[in-house]
Image 1 (cartoon, rainbow, N blue to C red):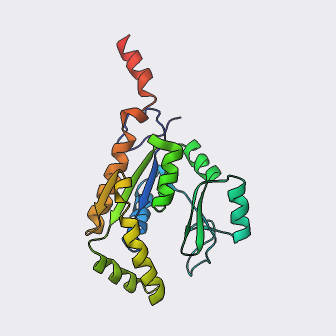
Image 2: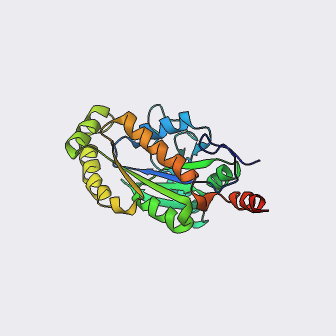
Image 3: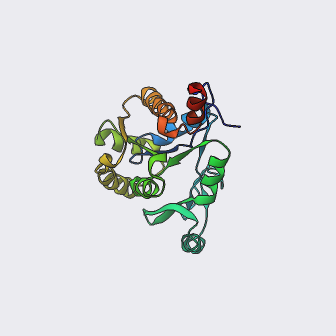
Length: 216
């Protein structure tokens, strides 16, 4: 049975959307991702694998799948990742089987990945990938947000700021670019993009049969 969305009242069968959110650390993409998942039953998060240590409050298999470097390398060798990247001395990867299972269940997949992962995913899945980049209002504001989070040392914050400039330089590799100067408005814009992309004619595989029946 094809799944329906609030913007798809006829329930035409369609291809799933691989919905990518990227931003510099502290720009708000994780907050937007949580709101999307809470508001949309047809969207499920892709849970990445990582070699970094688990942080307080995180759950294995929910926030990330935490593995050691040896296991991660084994998964890379076995082609178990759709994409993977090396970030801040740690590795992050998107499990192929998990994403395929979500799509098979009739849901769209949400990815919280960086520009490298977005590029790799686009090379694999092309038109099914929708890439959204979230910009901070300013680098000064971004720096203050990282300080206010109180989860990183000064050295780590400095490294994140240096990486932020590099990440922003890849803004033109995305389909949509939004400024997160109002969290609620930015979330609404992101959800509007997702619903509009679901309705694209190129994804409505079930529309062909409907048109043929209409023309009889």
